[in-house]
Length: 556
Ligand SMILES: Cc1cc2nc3c(=O)[nH]c(=O)nc-3n(C[C@H](O)[C@H](O)[C@H](O)COP(=O)(O)OP(=O)(O)OC[C@H]3O[C@@H](n4cnc5c(N)ncnc54)[C@H](O)[C@@H]3O)c2cc1C
Image 1: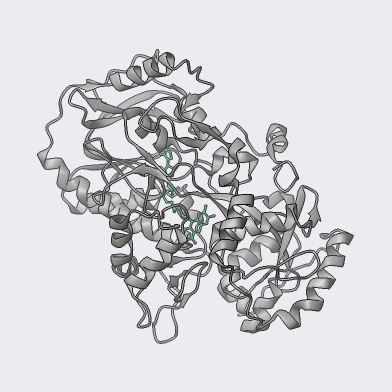
Image 2 (image 1 turned 120 degrees about the vertical axis):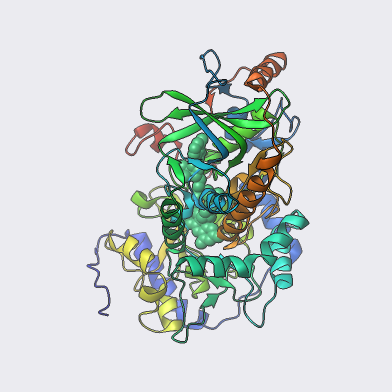
């Protein structure tokens, strides 16, 4: 195959950037093969405490009502959790549903699709409602890969220890155990469904390192792993004839008079009409919260990542776990501005690219865990003043030409072709010049608290994927989320379908919404917004949004 030809724009970099690139090029030969020191536990704690956004007191608010009353969460999330329900003052006839099913799945990403496949395997009626189209989801955007300990030098026990250390020992042991033990089978399941993983000529799966992994266990489909996995899952859902209601958001859960989950109120995203779905079990698979732009950060997330599932669950009485811990991916695009916040996959560092400051110094081992790496980048820019000036702040180089020097010509096009093409659109050739990055809001480490059967404290309410908390503790390792989505999506589908035959639904009600509203009033909380948010308030080109982008500057 002929190499991709890129028409380089000579004016794409500022003079300051060009001067700095010269320094990066000058130090490159001595950096290749250099064994960059790992930080000690004390050094990691120190950089996290001082520079990770999770430690900024002013980014958080204490909840005044609900199951996690007294705990802190990001302020933007607190506003939504304490927001005004969209069904208040509106007539909704929950006794006469428009849809009747056994398992209702809210969210058409990887977790929702995996859950649907297993629920149907369990022989129950299954329906997916999703806010956009099925596959319009963070899963579709995943790049780097999915972890599983399936090589002879590896084991689920080693995978467990890596993820436990990465999660700062807060992972729920029973969830983490399930994640790592079922990982090899999850890969085989996807492979069997038709996912085209990267393989050697003899069919052996190619595996690489990710941040915090002690073995090469990252399975990938080039740098569009999520798109490939979602393609296959979506086909499977469609081929099995599973009912999909798209452009339809869940805006409230329905409980029955015994406190069991009994369905959801739905809103047509185009017409605004409300509908009711009755179900014996509900699986929340609504994904993350990147579009809430915590602390003004840009995000790598898809447009619908607005934490809706957390709001629905919380208002119904489900507990949150570790909702105060957020993952800022260390390498979001910092330049050019048109791609601000878009993800530069960790695979770029797995393939050999180092993090380098304005003076051409590799200031850290590029494969520290994500929280430590993000905090170290922020420190390099803010405290040490060693960032590269950009129109929106300052940033760090990711020295991509190293990849070709280490792996040989053509490595970038073979291993990270999506990334190469993304930059080529702006006249940048990452094979020849390094790229500028800064942390971007990427993942919610916490979520709704579940058991190893994926159920919350509300009977019949299950949660899977990024909306669930506990698997990853207080920091997720690369490749463990796609794995989580498959393992726990399937888990939720299996346990929800097994739960259904024993359920007798009582009288459906929205009284929990009124009760929550009364609690807000009693606590003197004036709701600032209607929630769930459903979609962010800005659109592309909206100048209001430009004002919120303050990342990279001293005030963040
Ligand atoms: C750019 C990017 C790259 C990533 N790369 C990797 C990687 O290489 N490896 C890895 O392990 N992880 C990666 N991740 C993380 C991983 O992809 C996600 O955490 C995971 O796919 C989430 O899956 P999910 O099914 O829980 O949520 P999603 O895939 O986000 O699906 C949620 C679905 O719910 C729908 N929804 C939301 N609210 C409602 C509502 N109120 N009503 C109805 N539907 C609703 C959404 O529209 C969406 O369809 C990446 C994430 C991003 C953003």
